Image (cartoon, rainbow, N blue to C red; front, side, top):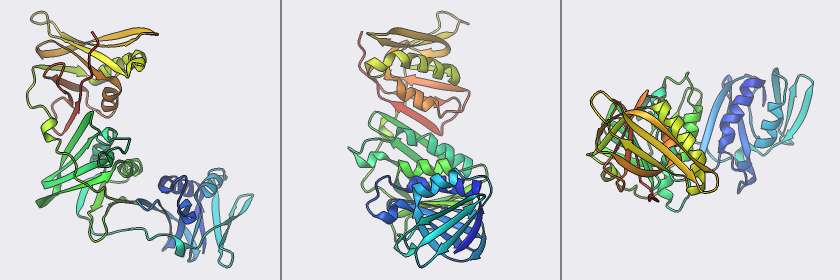
Amino acid sequence: MKVSVLQDKLAKGLSIVGRAVENRPTLPVLGNILLATDDARLRLSATNLEMSITTWIGAKVDREGSITLPSRTLADLVNNLSPERVDLTLEVATQTVNLKCGGTNANIKGIDAGEFPTVQQGGEADIIVPGKVFKEMITQTVFAAAKEDNRPILTGVQMQLDGNVMTMVAADGYRLAVRTTEIEQTFAKPRDLVIPARALSEVARIISDEDETISITLPGERDLVLFHMKHSDVASQLLDGKYPDVAAIIPRNYVTSSVMYTSDLLAACKRAEIFARDSAFSAKIFVKPAAGPGEPGAVTIAGTSAERGEGEGQLDASVQGEGLHVSFNIKYLIDVLNVINDERVVFESNGPASPGVLRPENRDDFVFVVMPMAINR
């Protein structure tokens, strides 16, 4: 193998695939990145056996070939090279790659590419989704997936396909995020799959403005789902088990509804979080209807610390229904407000013992549900 690539392209490619490399791999080759010539491109692949990431970068290929090189060594070296052409030459007998760039000359010992696991690539697209929409769907759900694996199925995001509607659902037992969109394809029979949240996070991270559409290949003989972007592929094993039926958790009626500016509510929550840290992030929300015709209602967000004091912020709001005094984990509200790009949000509740609901105003394709915390009066 003898190839030449630009330093910035190689550095970017290594940063993309490197996220699939485990810190403590079970096999030495899993700590390596596969470099293989592919027509006039260099293909980079990494895998942890549950997820694989492949990306292609433009290259001048003088001699075909492939090799695996230590991920961290290669990435650290490339990131510190001058922004010039990088020449890579493989010495097959010793499985060593000579790297030259400007005044740098290095030899990196690798492992034969034949020992690298097979990485899923390509495949016929079963679903095609606009890149911007799919990235937003991921960011508006993946944060609500469980971080601990006490219930492994909740560490994933459920993808539901029914007719021409795709729904993504994430829940960790305390909060729930649901995002839907219409797709061009139609599924006569509903289909569900649960994808690890980590894999979807990587897909969202890779999607760029160049990715006008994302092609999704659903599992076939191999229990893998594949996401194909313009220059990269991400393949992931699915999670085994049945995802909980969360539809019943979403309230259908409300006794209190308030509309606020998203940025104002987010800022108030961040200020309350400073004091709520000492009380398991429990913050109080007071919703007060308008005192009279033509007057605004108000929403107050308050955080209290026995040691450091207390702080509260009041927002003007359009309030309908009854007043409300409820307590939530303020971090959960910050998480969801960070992924809502709409100017205003609607907060709804059936009372202090009922789940709270947040959604963008005038949209029904995204809803967030959060369980209340006990109120210390």
